[in-house]
Image (cartoon, rainbow, N blue to C red; front, side, top):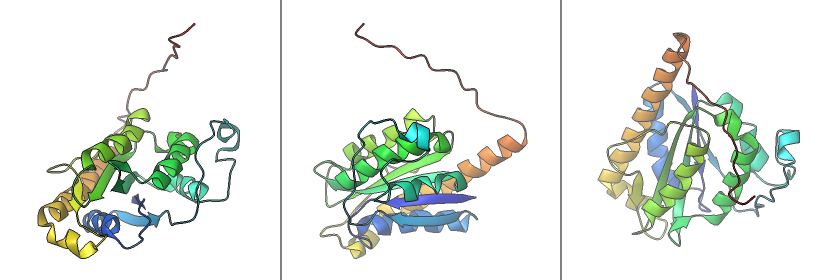
Amino acid sequence: MKVLLINGSPHKNGCTNAALTHVAGALQEDGIETEIFWIGTKPVRGCLGCGKCSELGKCAFDDDVCNQIVAKLDEIDGIVLGSPVFWAGPNGALKAVLDRVFMCGGKKLAGKAGAAVASARRAGTTATLDVLNKYFTFFHMPQAGSCYWPMVHGRNNTPEDVEQDIEGVAIMQQLGHSMAYMIKAQAAAKEAGVEPTLIAKPQYNYVH
């Protein structure tokens, strides 16, 4: 069993990474393998809505991290999205990557556990979490909960500040334990022959 944690910060070892490290540590304590993937600082593309991914099984553009992430989705049982707060929302580079990852590989994540965490100096965390959590809803992915909203606080991208946020650290750890339980429960249900009921979704256009 494995969880992929995506660090959507331009700072590899900053506050977002500190938060994800605590989530990963709790998952590992419960026997779940983890990988923290940093999206880096190189330019990334936004989705063009071209539809080629439906033919290729990956994004038509292969010059950034998108397809690296898509290639990992088959082997994981859960995903955690982590972002700093930029103007009361997620990092734009992360949003551009996730738009394409979920367009190309969302079906590979269908039904798997999801969670999102945000880091900020002060505010904008709940708005950021709202954006990130909507990716899970589209692919009927159950979201792991914690004991409060999954956010940490630190300024000037100082991970040491996150360690001082003792409540935030505990929230990250509980999130990891909750996700581990969810993944194990899903595996037990599947072994017992219990599968989710999925319906065919009709499409409707408001303008005819």
